Length: 445
Image (cartoon, rainbow, N blue to C red; front, side, top):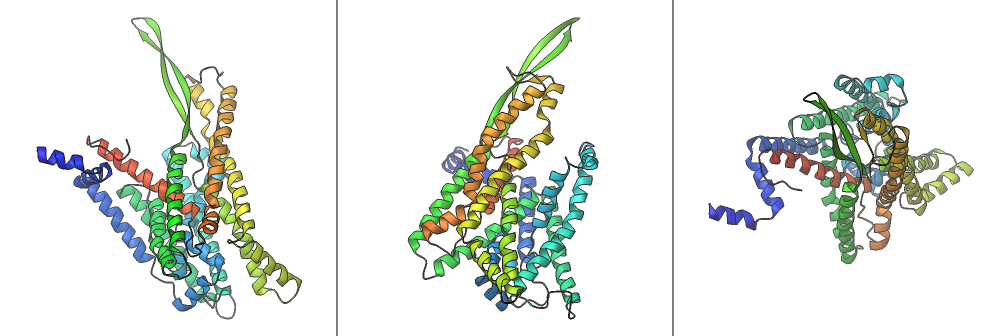
């Protein structure tokens, strides 16, 4: 017994907590289920759509910066043009649209207030919206790849309608399968299934990206080492900002009758206002908007005839390229703006001041009702500046890292870093909660 205690004391805390978690049969079953589902996902990501020429795809992605940028967000599945090329991003977009539309459309707002049944209905609407979004995104990416000579026969003329519909059907079916797999992970495993699938795609692409950097003769080992140091420092910074919060003190006044007399009791709590309340959503919004102008410019440059229109398209394609300064400056500005926009939208949906007043709570020194709402808004705006500038910095990190290290083959996805760190922390917390119920020491506390 003493020997076992000594051995456990010599192990790192995280390793020991992982061993203790794996020893529990129910937790082990959940972890193995998540691992099996991720293996199925990676196998699925290598199943190509009908009529794909791998050699042509490789040439197209190696010579097109826009396609290479989009491939990062697909975890490498787009470069293979697999049935999972779209990933779960159409579903994420649909979820964000539903979240933003709920306070604006009275019928959706009424559904959100109907408890679990209303939330399930809203989730079903998100599933339905995913299908047309996947069709639109899939067709746009197929046209872009065709313009880069990666595929052929995409369109609805000259007998290409049936092959195009079959390819789109495969892409949409792949997205819906991944959504179903993600929900299954959430139900039977540990962690958020959709987030874990995105994490799996990002992590699976890391060895290929680093392999390209090490195997390319023009890359300096010092630059790659510096890039690794930057990545570690940024991950630490992301953890700090993800966990940072301003705690607004709250007091609750309760009245109880005891022995025919009225007694008043005071309880204390706090409202945790996160510095980064928006998460990675501003990055998704900004990237989606900023990637559209170079796509449109590329389309004009490839399809327009000789003349002013073609020259303008070629100029804009170069100026707005993901490797240029204008692109990243616009991304920084949009990320900061969307951070404030999304934070305010979420804050307005929570009705914190109204809920506090209903529960008998108040902020010391602040009158209940509208003054409380205005006070929380002022505090939220001040701390959101820190979160917005932080997200803006993380958004332009790929450009800055490339300029500092001169390693062109390695690209760090800003949203990818936030996803990896956020998903790992969330999963660790869920495992820790499972372990705390069994009186084991967890990962974090």
